[in-house]
Image 1 (cartoon, rainbow, N blue to C red):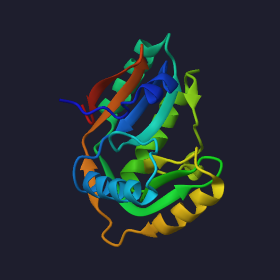
Image 2: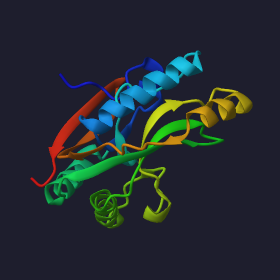
Image 3: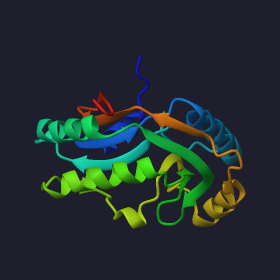
Length: 196
């Protein structure tokens, strides 16, 4: 059975009407992600919001009325996209105002290509994209935990202790993407094989 990315009622409510194109690591990157998340949660001591499952977001959308049209475009993109290599290079953070602990990914050729070809496909549309940045400014990552509710000084101390390079650089190739959407308080997903 598919493990959801987000699973708490407050997370699901905050994502209502949104869609995300994501990659789900299942090998070496997923394993190190789980270890990092468990260790960070233990060190943090207080409860923190976090993804239920590690994922790499390639794009976010707000298209509740045109989800089928968006899905058709994403299916076409996925059929043309080769499998994508992801390699974890560090535990890092997005500092204030976000306060998010992340596993930063290396900018592999296939990951950069996937982002840029997706951008090219989307540029011909008027779909509402969430939090999109130019490729040069985008940090490929898996969010580990969300610390926005923490006091800035507490977050700074916590993040300073967590941030580090990963000497082993776990790597895996992901052969499918998922288009995830949130509707009526439920996470839905369509799995899209890469390369047809």
